[in-house]
Length: 218
Image 1 (cartoon, rainbow, N blue to C red):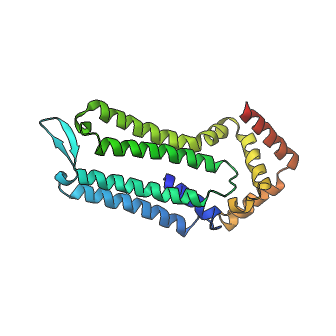
Image 2 (image 1 turned 135 degrees about the horizontal axis):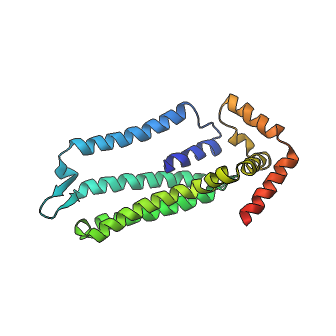
Image 3 (image 1 turned 45 degrees about the vertical axis):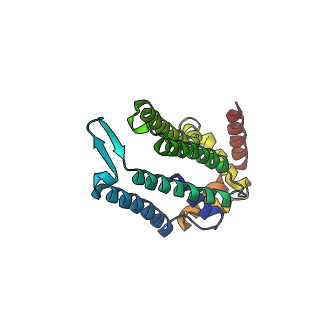
């Protein structure tokens, strides 16, 4: 989903097109179908070629080729995300998307590297409860932190500073010079967004921006 978000930002800001309708459904379909295809293949092939339970040691073990295939898919996704991020490097984002994408991407790279090292380079990993537990926690923490880096501020302000955050958002759209890209949704939503921006009182918007910026600094 992180890669899909990067692609949507690239599609809007670099290609100047609306990330709606057919392109959204196509992107989601490709993502879901790829996961279903991989999951189906992993399920129907013999367990010796994927993962299997070793009774004598009471552990689950995975075929090395299967591990390499999974890691290869992860790194291909990371490479795709890196390309999208690089192409967006000069875009003047309004809501700090560049730093959010960069921080989340670095965190996911660290987690992917940790998985690669543990699964391929540490021979005792399958039999080590400590290593397996540490990797599980690292994956969960990494995924959660990567999500909240992007959604944390927005979630907090939508709950506790809803009106000020709305005015800050509207004011930013009016003043940053990229209002057109953010209004690429649909004809109906474009009109609604434009009316919301144009009919908001300038003094209230500026005040909202100042209040929100001041409270953010604190």
